[in-house]
Amino acid sequence: MELSNHTVLIVGGTSGIGLALARRFARAGSTVIVGGRRTDLVPDLASVAIDVTDPGSVARARDEVLERFPDLDLVVTMAGVLLVEDLRDPAHFEIVATTIDVNVLGTIRVIDAFTPHLIERGAGTFMTVSSGIGFLPFPLMATYGASKAAVHAYSEALRAQLAGTGVDVIELVPPAVATTPQQREMNPAALDLDDYLDEVTELLAAEPAPREVLVKGVQMHRWAERDGTYDQLVAQRSQALSRLPGR
Image (cartoon, rainbow, N blue to C red; front, side, top):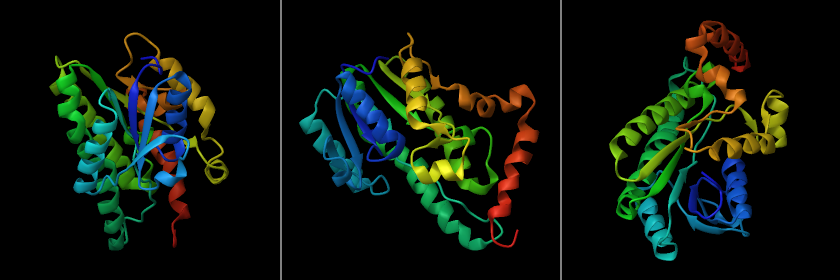
């Protein structure tokens, strides 16, 4: 998949990886629409207000996008939250509910909204966004990992159910990527954003496009069970639990 000659909607494209990816598509010559709750953050791109936790907002955004951009052929479901939680504290359930609503149900709401359009076109692509943490848990962010594992499983099922319709499903599987200086400070091992997207665009350019976009930095997560490193890596990542109060 080349980045040019698409009409692409990136839901969750007003910051971070989503915004950087949107600008890559735009520079390559695609028509780009970013969706999010703060569209004022991206005055240089076409935008649509959308709250993926609100079915009414998703429906309104779909109608607005398809009215303005009837050639839409690529929908990227980038919206997500990443929250630390202490599973010993029952109050963490609020984080669970928020994470599942945004990361899982939000993804499904967006896909459901645009599936009829892409099937009617007979061609198009959904790009879902899971995470290396969906394959190799980071215990400090338990529900985030569970939500991304769900996105992976849903993407696999969606691909199977859309087979023969002309609609493809590509799963983007990011590792830790530093999208702000604060994230770089918190995780010095996180990939540089531009370096990450350089590798992503190279992988997307393959023919056919990969079902999973796996940069080198995420392969240790994706294949940990196969490689026999899973238990060791989970134990190593569990050391971050010391950041929780009282640990």
